[in-house]
Length: 83
Image (cartoon, rainbow, N blue to C red; front, side, top):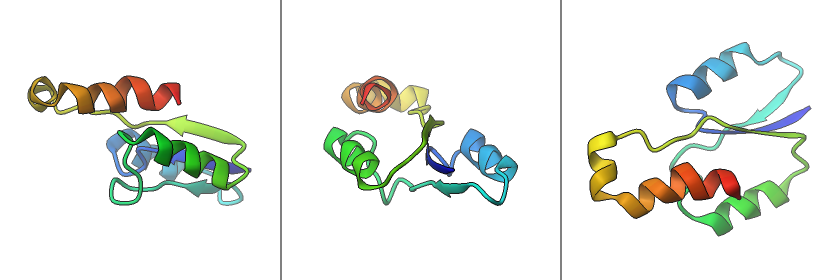
């Protein structure tokens, strides 16, 4: 099985990685590898490999900053999962 895990460096993502059986291949790109606010980058990654499953454990969780960066927070928490 080939899984794409978005948010693999976060608290939930790290726990998912710890629980993943060894025979399962997990791609978990970090923030420096995949900008979730860039829809084209998400689609390109998903189309680049035959993923069986996509798990979205990513979120913009900095509540105070989210008010200042509304567009980015919306892109990550609403648009990215839609893609």
